[in-house]
View 1 (cartoon, one colour):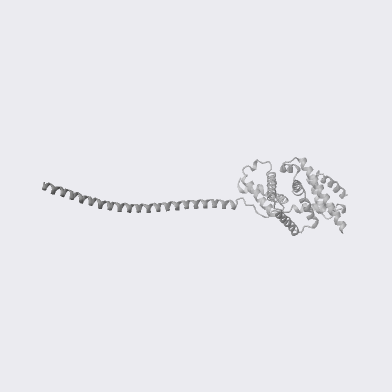
View 2 (cartoon, chains in turn blue, purple):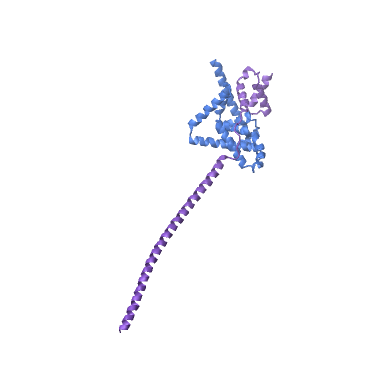
Length: 171
Length: 140
């Protein structure tokens, strides 16, 4: 597999990798680094790449594992200050892209979900993967995917209704 | 009529029983302009998902890292440095050996010169001895 062939196979899902990394790592810089790292790993394993049933699913699993490793090492070094910085960056970016308040509230609500549920929301509601694909990527059963997704959607909705009612009362 | 169908779909959606097609219908409805007032709280949710879909990475992928390149160069550089230091050390030792050789040669030359002088003296003594021998023979 030469470089051109490799790129034509792996480039179509580059933004999905990036968005998944950003969902977990929060900062854009970290997500870009993770994307770069993942593509280097794929390039090194290009000989084995055709033996996988779905290269995209394989890449997403690798992204997930890489991000969890990054999060673990970040927690291990206990850089709470750095983490706060990332949050600020995330917010200022939201304002840059002019997302309205209520939409950025959705973003905040999702970041409060458990990481696994965040990933499932990301893959289903944003990337529109089928349940079977998600279960393959996360290496869990399809029913577990549905249970977690339902839980995540209900949590976000309840919180949204709370926010919504609060807004009405305030006015 | 339509909002009833949307409500049904929303129930399925919350139970994670909707298909991708059904979720596309929901997305279209909530990113559109006409939303039933009692479903208003879902608007932000689907708007957020629609917007998140358009986010993309701006960095281009590099498959051959410069980092590795630098690592390689530094490895070669340190090897060359090591070799040149060793060669310098060898050269210096050679020089020292040559210096020592020259000096010992000088010393040997000095020694042999003195030794020769000694031998000449001894030769002279030998002559003296034979001469005295002759004199004594004649006297006897």
